[in-house]
Length: 468
Image (cartoon, rainbow, N blue to C red; front, side, top):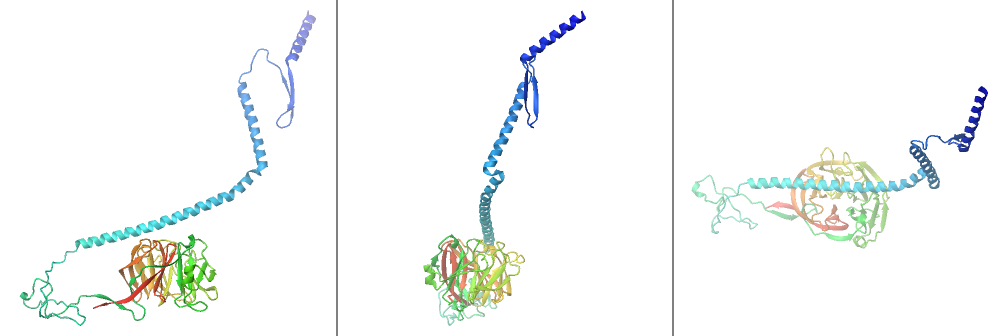
């Protein structure tokens, strides 16, 4: 029985093995690391499908997609030189775009600051006008004076000039001697003269500014670089250039260093320069001037003044203007980095600027034309940013109220001889409505100005004021 049972078991095992061989499969292959693997697969005799096969298949698909993406990235990098090559090619374009953006931002920022300064100036003017209106409103009206009786043979006095002198009544006498009028005719106990200002020609060519003529246009600039600029003649010219030589600098841009020379005004109007000099240092704004054979100008982005000798075409002197603001700290109201304004008149070389100590008020300094040292300084009580420009005539500084209004005024004068300033009101015209430079030429007795691409000049009338 035992032997029979063992034989039956052996036969059953052989049957099961032969049935399994019909449905079993053997797989051999390399895995991802390259190692050989054998896999024996036998179908389940009881389960028709395995649970969660979708998750396994999804993971397999994800793996295959990851491999494909890696292969595509490698192929793309190999063809184009890789991400580093792409970045290297894109960097100059990005830098150029960044530079353009920064430049536009700086221009907009500068324009914003200029408009803010102009707004502050207008607000200050409005406040001054309001205070003046209050003063006028609170001032009592003058008494009504009845008409005077016709002139008869009385004690009326006529001075030699022909003007009538009015006298006050003698208040020491009887009250009946006085009439309703505050003035009466007759022989006075004392006399009062009515001040009458008249213009007297200045014998020495110097005097107080009386009036400014209409602008005369000599030339219009050729391109955008000439929107702002400075043009000038040497009031004390030296060889090899004569007194008729005209000099010009276009000041728009960041690389301003060309000085153009013209034989005379006619050649300037035709646009034919006879000399072009390349200056050793960059020029800042429109504050340059020419005096005694040298060009004086401010070096860009600094308070350094430079004296450039025209005959040797080299720098003759350089010196910092002590404590002077620069590059937009204390400009005129139109902006343009006009912090330091140089000029020359009958009395020498001048600088108009401001300092932190002066808190933005105009400072006038007379300079040594050889060494650029400050000889003497005056501090005024008018803010530099509140005026459009200034010029100096016979040691007197005059300021212009607006650079853009067609009809404006010269509103302030400071006399360095007396160290006194006062308000004035002399009509001045900005014909082209953007006046960026105004300077006096003592030889021509004219103002030279640069008004919105146009080179213009103004005749002046100088005199001294006298009370009769």
